[in-house]
Length: 408
Image (cartoon, rainbow, N blue to C red; front, side, top):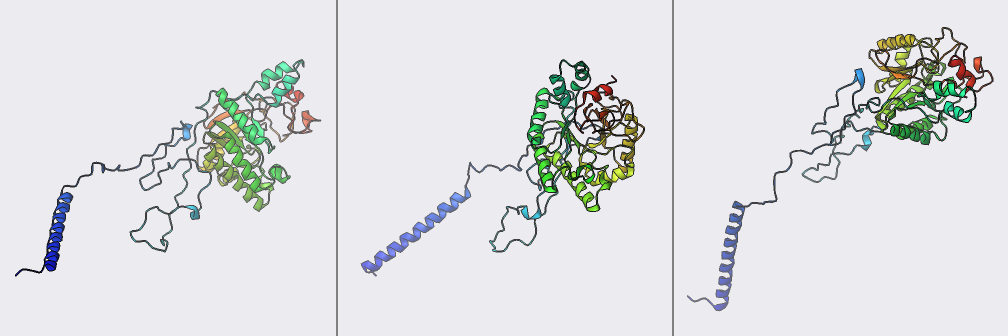
């Protein structure tokens, strides 16, 4: 039977559409069967991480380099210096999303990874000898008194020697420290900085930083000023030996500040060796000092300093260091100030005593664990209006004191 033209047209269209769909399906199936994308190569199996540069040996207490982070750790090297540990609230959650969007946050709390303390570089291996400060008080005195008969002796015996540079909280401390370490770096020498600005310095006498926050800010700036330059820092002479003259709460605060300073120097000045001052054997029992050193963060410091601005013999200080280490249960390194122990003091006269002499000139080593023998206090600087420094102020350079220390 012949279909009407209109119905026949509709059937033809339908049959044509069905044929087209069948052909397209066949084409798609064939295409899928032989699909090949030349741009879809194999993806890397992992992300490479640039390793930290080797900081060099650290002597007898050197530890092997920290192992590389596992694939589950952050791609950032674990040993990268960190100024402050992140609080749990500041840790970003994983970037991986769930398969189904949800308006609610994941119930699990991101795990906060502990901050890994970076290994310290070895400033001794990075330099060639100790730095002679071109702006020390003895240098200035010699330059201003070239016609003085004492000038040649003071120049040869003191001004031309490596001396510690003290930073007492002066407004120019940060810029001075930056220039000082930069000058030493240009010369390829190792500078010695003495930080002396702890709040209630001088047994709670009102000296030092005005507050804990001011001290932390000062430490932050001083550590940043040193930066990656090699350096030695003697941290807060007398701060631990005088701890027992403070109230209980003030002691806790001081220990916390010292620990903060140690950590900041370690993270922001990675090529600096920091030594917490520990007085000497005639001041604090070794067991007590060990307890205080632990609380002040000595574990993250290179070690401790002894005999700063004092007159005890090197042998006694070495014995004391061994006793402190025994109480610590470790073998921390130490330095000794030999600037005025050439004729060791047996009594307790600490203020410009008569008969004192300079000790051995600054040098490395001398005993097991002894990193350096330093002139932390520049010979000739007065302890105050007392002894052979009568009429002088503490910290002033006196040519008369200098000559007596030199044996003239």
